[in-house]
Image 1 (cartoon, rainbow, N blue to C red):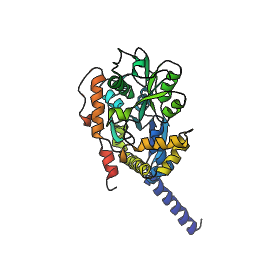
Image 2: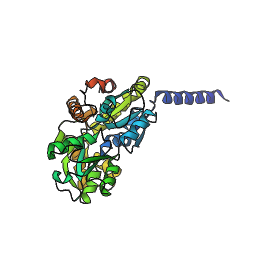
Image 3: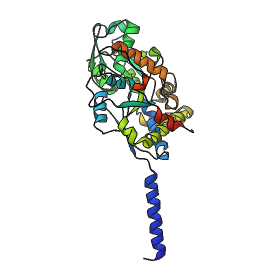
Image 4: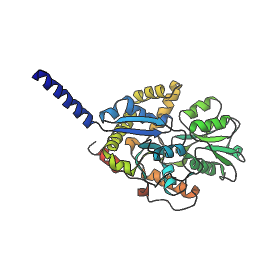
Length: 330
């Protein structure tokens, strides 16, 4: 082989080796469905993950119990889930025993509770829910207890006394339960709440408006993974923060992605959805966790968690070291 060809082959091999070694590893993410995934879609479509060297694998779950089981089975590295779920597992108040030692923590914020209380067409007000059944993801955590708090505050209805609850899974499963007349009310995410509104279902309350500052979802990982793959998580967090910022600064781009990913949205619905995503209770600006919103989660859990106990401190569930490193110099 001529010397020039040997040099060319060696140069290509060196370049390939450098490009591979410079890449961050794959991050496997499991979330719920819905338009609150806009930052994830944006990070994929606008190349924010690629620019940070992250190969993102993204999937959605059927419910929080399944999500935690898959997470602990090592199928995913990061989950996007209701922050309350993590508190419930930490405090032994979850629907199922944790499949292993509690080593989860939130490192980045998602949104502030972008969900609505939707009811079947025959339900005209809170009084009509009395004596009936509501559908939740899990009975003892997540937006289940958000629903219980809203029904208490707005309708004076006490959980397990004035109404019953059934655990069915994610938003789509809750909608199925209402359509099958197994439940008359449920907390529904967007844009599915708009879809059932077209069918004659009513919105009784916006969760964010009723609860005030509330940490709806957060990005969660496990400590063993974070110790081994901190660089990957820092790159992931930086890409997600850039995607969040892009959404707030680029309405037209955001609406275009929403309409492409959330099928069936009208122009008016996409506009309304964008307003919700960027308004109170919507996406956490820069992907930052809101300490005041976490206080609200802990207060509600102290009311509905079993066994009853004092929650906290916040550091038990949150560690922003990864996020802080991602934001350094930004």
